[in-house]
Image (tube, rainbow, N blue to C red):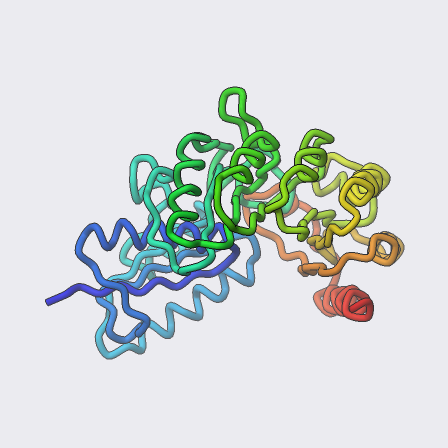
Amino acid sequence: MTKKYHIIIFGCQMNISDAERIASVLESKKYKKTDNLSEANLVVVVACSVRKSAVDRVYGLVEKIKKLKKRPQTILTGCVLAKDKIKFEKSFDKVLDIKDWEKNYLKIKPKYSSKKLAYVPIMTGCNNFCSYCVVPYTRGREISRSAKDIICEVKNLVKNNYNEIWLLGQNVNSYKDEKINFPKLLKLVNDVPGYFKLNFTTSHPKDFSDELIETMTKCPKLSMDLNLPIQSGDDEILKKMNRPYTVAQYKNLVKKIRQAIPNIRLSTDIIVGFPGETKKQFNNTVKVLKEIKYGVAFINKYSPREGTTAAKLEDNVPWEEKKRREKILIDLVNKKK
């Protein structure tokens, strides 16, 4: 009898990329994919611990699995905090670190979930320790993948008619493989023969160099969509977040990018209701949003995550106020469309 697996993904592009590598491992063990949860022998949940709401959704899924007539084996993996692992061990048969699937996780050949779009991780982990973020605790410190392996994967994708390629990393700007930094890697990927659109995410403003801006102008395959998270428009809140730039420095960076690439389409990430955020500090974020005129803004209400520095601060902005601030920013962005 054929063993069947079903993967459920919570989170961003990196989680999708994780799932594609997990699928490859499972199929090497003679499992076959099914889109039907009820017929799966194995259910793998690729989790995200960045926000508490994502963890709550995993609990909701556990209840759904319990109601199945035939209970499958279950594995929880992805970004999972140590404290969450202990809690979830009662609900899942196994809780695995993403690196536990294979000795060299980044060398796993993925089972791509799309026939046109491919996510190519160039690094994993993070060294930044933003005070609200769990990634350094769940994925560890930064590890860059070999540039040779990345280029080989991209060439193979283009050969197989993939027309959109995303380079992924928690902070792609800090990529480093011997003498090849991210701008050099970007140019190497762009110069792979064939037709395809090129994207990358995520970028930390502190590492967005003049060299990268110049390189972007020399990459005709590069998409004009750029995500540049600001997180807050107030310097004091940015300092509490351990984001090592000021609003003025961020705006100067945006100015340089737009001068070099006039048709760039900027998006950003913002957290509202960070501990201690006053109405005046929130209004500073409103001012920045009005001034920079992003095409898209991903607004998130702050929720404390155990183990992070920010979790030690008093979460003193009421939830209703967070929702109100979120709506103001969402309405402001939508008004510009």
